Structures are given as C-alpha cells and as structure tokens.
Image (tube, rainbow, N blue to C red; front, side):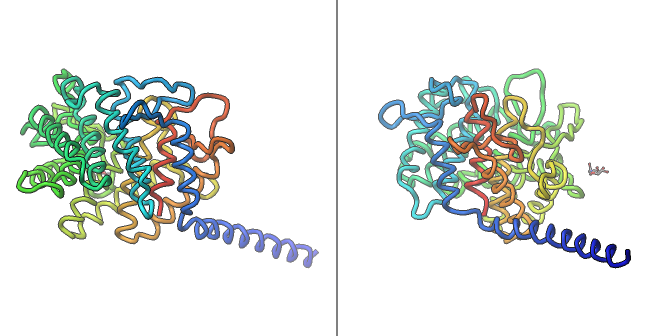
Length: 381
Ligand SMILES: *[C@@H]1O[C@H](CO)[C@@H](O)[C@H](O)[C@H]1NC(C)=O
C-alpha cells in the first residue's frame, strides 16, 4: 500500500512539475512573437478588408460580406484600423513600401469616403474622434517619409479646432468629450489621445505650443482621471464633478501612450512608473484567465465600439514594455498574441476579438473586431 501511495505521489509530482514546465515553456516560447506570424496576420487582414477605390484612395470595408463603402459612423474605428496598419509598417524591416502606399490611400479614403471632407470637425461632434484621426495622420506623415505635408497640415488644423471648441477651465481644465451636447463630460477617451496627438505634432513642428498643451492636459487628466494607488484610469468626470470610475482597456492604453510620449521627450522615469501601474491594473482587472494566461477581455465582444478597444491597449502597452524592457509585460503581451493567433480562422487567418476562443466561422466578421488581434500581433515584442 505504502509503495502504491508513493508511486502515485511521484506521478502527481511529475504531473505538477510537467504542468509548470509547460506553462513557463509556453511563455518562453512566446517571446518574441514571430515575424512570420506578424506578416501572415497583416496580410490576412488586408486580403479580407482592404479595398482600393481609385488612384491613391482606399478604405477598409466594414465586414467580410460588405465590401461596399463604409459610412460616417465608422470614422474613429477607421482611424484605429489605419493605426494598426501603421503599426505593421513601423515594425516591418525594411519598411514595406506596399504598407506605406496603403497608408496614403487610407488617409485619402478617410477624408474622401468616410468623412467626405478633410474638415472632420465640421460634421463630427465627438472631440475624441478628431483626436484619433490626428494621431493616424501624423503617424502616417512620419511613416511615409514626411513628404505628405498636407497630412501634417490637416492634423494641426483639426487639433486646433477641437482645442478651440473643447477646452475650458471648468473642472480645472481638460477637454470635453463632445461639442454642443447637453450631456457634458470630460473623458479619458479624448484627453489621453489628445496628449498623444499633441506630442506627435510637437515633434514635427516648431514653436507651435503643442507640447505645453500636452503637458497641461496631462496635469489635469492625471490628477482627475487616474488613481495613482491602483493604476485605474476612470472613464470620465461629469460637469458636476462626479467621477465615473468605469475602466476600459483603451483608456488604460492611451494613458500609457500619453505617459510614454511624455517620457520620450523628458526621460523622466516617473512616466514609466505610471505606465507600469496602469498596465498592471489592466492585467489584473480587465482580463479573463485562459490556459494559465490573463487574456485581455473586458467584455468587449459585445457592442459597437468595444471589440477594438484592446487593440489600442496592445499598441501603447507594447511600446512602453519594449522601451522599459519590462519582461513581465513583454511576456504577457506575447502570450496574448500567441493566444489570438492560435485561435485564428484556419482558412482566412482572421482573428476574432475573444482571443481565448476559436474565431467564429458561422457569421461575418467586422474589420473592427478583427483589428484588436491585428494590433496585438503587430505590436507584441
Ligand atoms: C483609489 O482607489 C482606491 C481603491 O479603490 C480608493 O480607496 C481610493 O479612494 C482611490 N483614490 C482616489 C483619489 O480616488
């Protein structure tokens, strides 16, 4: 009897040990996320969704069935899909000229098809939408060799319009989320992207004041929307001063992005500490455990805007983790990328937004829901 028990003990110990080996083995194998998989992921996405409309004009269609023209409602998601392609261009080495060409075509498409005008603010009352667009444009300007001066010019005009209509001193500073709206809130989703946008503009212009606008917004946003004990980024503050503390992956992400951009300029390590805490908050609270990995999942599978949120987090958290050489975050992001990629559709290679589940194959997929998998695969270390 004694020997039977000890035999089982040995088996049990071996099993436990084996499990640990597999788990840590997975994590180790996940680093880095392979170049080959990154290339396959962006090629699959472009094959499924990219449309060239005419000379120098392109767009991402709304879903796998609808290769028709996207409507105005898709403005900000289109901007973020352009950003995911910009991520692919940035990490490709040597930079793929085909991606550079698509960036130009997509920005032209954003103006001519999705918006119908380069003056987005003329019809779009969401100040955050304009800021996402400004980021996509300035990144596009940088990534296409700083030759498309009109991208940079348009970005400045749009940023300035939002500042003019969105900034005031009530609640102590910060930008309002929407223009001309009775429901007045100052939101994370506009203020942190505006800081990122301003820092991109600042490094491409001289004597424009964008940097001090970024610093001003940072001061207000960090004081009012960030909890420096927990790393939580609250969604918004209402005009009566009440805080809505709901947290989302994209807000954690753009908080990290804003701190990261300010770090690049100042080299002040405090910004990296902020990035780390905000990333840890997301890892702890905005994930679902699957096969030993905390998979980013903030109930984002439902709803119109939610499915792409974590792609924004993936972008900025990866930039931070690489810059700070934060091994914990790097491994975690790679494990998320591996999970998304492992669960891709075998035929189309598209990734759904629930990375821990196989990509749905019995319905049409939207280009927006597939963009979060695209972002994590392009950005993971
Ligand atoms: C930060 O979060 C903790 C835990 O939820 C809470 O007790 C504290 O009041 C928060 N701090 C601020 C300044 O809101």
